[in-house]
Image (cartoon, rainbow, N blue to C red; front, top):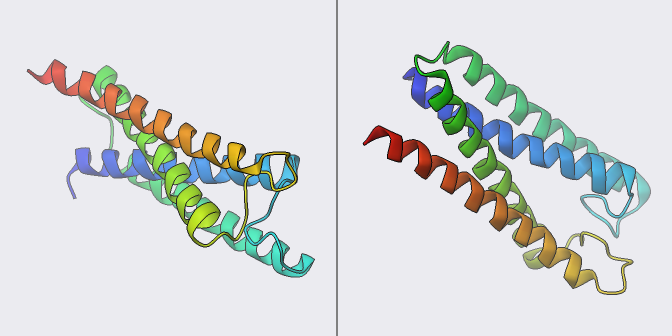
Length: 148
């Protein structure tokens, strides 16, 4: 695999895994708004969260390994911008995929089910994914414009 491709995939995986870890730390642990399977017995909630945290940790490790294997970039500023864009795209995609699948299709949890308007929190979560994706694509576009 070429070094640039490793950097791109690694950056994307880091963003995807980081947003997954952030979701687990903030919403599952600190705020305790939900777990992966919210309306399940406590032991199932703990196990489902553990599997989720293990999966995002593996994703982060894979991303870090690919970035390490990609070596030192020849154009560091361009590489950082490209990696940053792909990190944001990965994070935004995590929020969209997790939000659409778990909150809306499977309905295994909501962002904040005890809120007065839980749908508002779910939509804000999806909007954050769209914003991260948009920021990532804009940063990538800026990098590609420098190639011209």
